[in-house]
Image 1 (cartoon, rainbow, N blue to C red):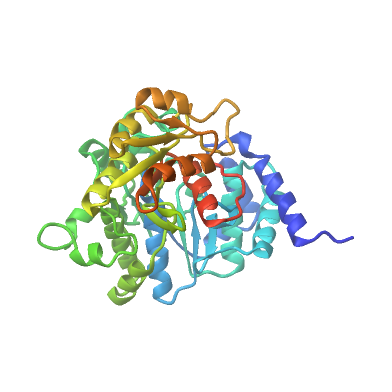
Image 2 (image 1 turned 90 degrees about the horizontal axis):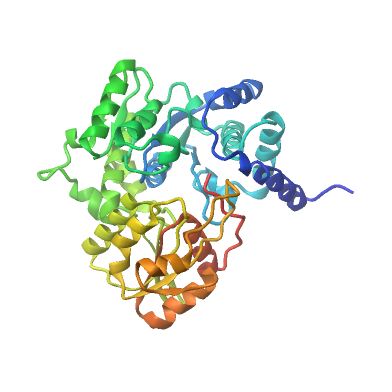
Length: 419
């Protein structure tokens, strides 16, 4: 009996998830060998490569939307997924359907027999984009840059680093300079590197690393954005209208310049962009929710500033984070936003058996609040306090945002994994 597409895809995803314990392995040797065996699918289309601590995914989404508005066939590769694994690999704005995803995954699993979860997913994206002859692939770095699996890309059209802040210190280093050096590893000789606003120490490292290999650093502050260094058009016509996204819009606009996209297409793409789980409002039948993937202190500060600039008041907070994140620091920023706080452990597929969610009871000890047993219960507790019109903010982990989004919208969910 011939197995159905659904059965085969379930087995392929099971085989892929069996590679999660390898984590997000840093190093290019295994990935390079697999791409050679696959006859270099990553060389068959133009590429924009985007890294950074926060904002890289939404910047990629903007560039992808602008390129599609210009008539290009575009692939988009991002991580992690919120609900379905297929969200990571998109062609012309849509996640791969089951048959296309199955074909890419089975080939990647077979070619890259020793690859990690993230490496396999990256190879599958390259194979899918090559098979479907995209004109452009917009590729998000997974972690760091220098040794990230996506960095086998040899000559992108342009690269970008959105922000540099503290996250993944166990892998990237414990100073901004060390983290910046890892992220600067995506710079390529003769290729423009667009950088967002960041601490001077991080910027200095990036400029030094880029200069050493002959990459041109282009700061968004050097572009003609208007009297106050901001482009009012970008702020007013962005499909993701919140304060912390302004830099990402400017970076995407600059990247689109290197792709030869005209201003009309850039404006159209910017207005149409959507990026779920990032300052995303969901007006559910029981009331409004705001979902944001703020999962480190820098993201928490950006979220707070965006709420202040938008004038939105939070009635109840649902917070959950992984134990190895700086969640007490995040809570110091976010907890004062609401008098009602509900804490819950995000439900995800851990890369390390020892990795766990921050204990909701421990969160409550930092700032008083209720501990919920699961995400559905946490949303119910928050809504009962906020009433039908109060805004419930859900944040602290992309795991949690994916869990909440699936619950609120009735979506199917593959196991979340932060790789």
